[in-house]
Amino acid sequence: MTTTTLTTRPAPARTGATGDPAARARARRSRLLHWIAVHTVAVAAALFFLLPFVFVFLTSVMSDNQAMSGELWPHEWHWSNYLTVFRTPGFLDWWKNSLLYAGLGTLLTVCSAVPVAYALAKFRFRGRRTAMILVISTMMLPPQVIVIPMYLVWAQQLHLAGSLWPLIIPMAFGDAYSIFLLRQFLLTIPQEYLESAKVDGCGELRTLLRIVVPMARPGIAAIALFQFFYCWNDYFGPQIYAAQNPASWTLSYGLESFKSAHSVNWNLTMAATLLVMAPVIIVFFLAQKAFVEGVTLTGVKG
Amino acid sequence: MATTTPAPALRRKRTRARLRTLGFLSPWLIGFSVFFGYPLIATVYFSFMHYNQIRPPAFVGLRNWRYVLTQMPLFGPALWNTLWLVVVMVALRVVFGLGIGMLVTKIKSGAGFFRTAFYVPYLAPPVAATVAFVFLLNPGTGPVNEILGAVGIPAPSWFNDPDWAKPSLVMLSLWGIGDLMVIFMASLLDVPKEQYEAAELDGAGAWGKFRYVTWPSITPIVMFAVVTGVVQTMQYYTQALVAGKLASGVSIGPGTVIQPGYPDHATLTVPQLVYSLGFQNFNTGAACVLSLVLFALAMAVTTLLMRKRAGLLAAED
Image (tube, rainbow over all chains, first blue to last red; front, side, top):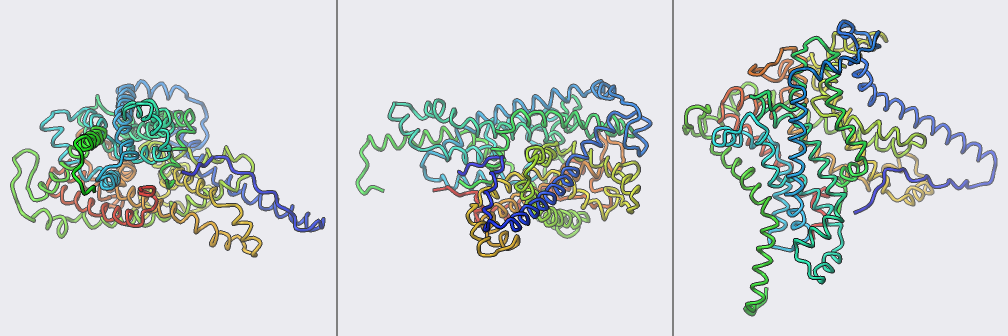
């Protein structure tokens, strides 16, 4: 695997072909123009990416009346809108449910993905290639393809519709995307480490827990983050299984109904929107390195 | 294969190795059979049944297939919208992602700030991002149209206009370009610097350097971005559904049934139609037929991906 860093490499020193001062001045001017052009485009792009957050935030602190106007800047800052959102019946339950789904789901995914990814990366056995192809196929499969029979089983045979368990339980049985990503990461661990562990008398399970897991910590962190975000953002799953029972709604699912409950109050809806965005963005800043590593991993060849 | 019969000890060792492999793979083997194999077979079974989820299923032969493929009025628009999004959204995302990736590698001052600024929208949960965009672009009081109006540019109705609803979704997807930006940036930084210098000595301009140095070395990543983009876009569901629902202004409560696709089926995608058929109309058979159509499309793309490899199966052996 190629290692990539987020820091731009220093530009190679331009060796002026000639010592001629006029040529050097020309080169400096063209470099300055280049700098200005690049940074103008960068600022324009930054506005495109950041202004939506700014407008959402500004509206979230407007009064009810002002939020119905087209004005952009709040007359008074109504921080209490955020309190109102928290006091909305159900909002705290949605938080709890999102944390349960994302937390437990992530834990189960990691526990089940580690041994599978390890076997796929390091064991030699017949059918290994087929297994990988099946993992990738599952990964590519739109969740809507298999949802109807699955729903019928959970609802009619197991009577778990109206809860998040039909979404959490399958994660104890290996998530294809996590298995795939972690396998790509484990491929980069040199075989010698595993062999020397075996020489020291470690069984496969001990090798996995003592040698592989500590070395694979960045990869495990990446799949954990991805899975956490996936669960936190999931809308389709809760819509299928939790919709019937508002007590098991998650933030992502509840947010949409929030808008209709406060149909004209864009200010409250925007406050709620920011409150749904905030946790993932905070988690990102806390775990930026692992995250970027994971994103890069998806696109990097072994 | 050894020609002689393996000694019992060796055979025992092999059996142990096989059991060990099975043991490590068991979570996935169970998950794959129960949560993938079974439902796939059941979907095929239900596609030949009439089943309203109350009375027991009854065999109807190809009736569901005929209905979905030739008679169902919404199948055409849903398929068209999904294909439109697959082509337009993926193409623009790749071009825009590459552009932003290149921009980021050229920024000298404040690089950290710009990278983070470009990346963060990708993190916004899809529902939250969609709600935000429905607000930003709402024709009544939305900031975007306020600004366009102040500048004197005629403002479209975005999510409320059948012609503009899909382009608005594309804009939303470009806002969340962070994932592509990162992988393009990483691959651009991996292009050997000496090659640029050599090209420069040969008198290549900016375009020549891109065409003959950058492009050949990033093609695998572009390919990867295209294929994963196609796969993701075929599943495109949440943003289209939420945007349509919210822009329609119909109040949504538990139990309300809203046919997706507002305005005028412009945002109806195939996955939404599966949901609508299966969970709103309880037409299990037709929903399963449509699921299988989606499955066939997804598998066609996956096969292409395996063939072109696109880096996914690399380092296999």
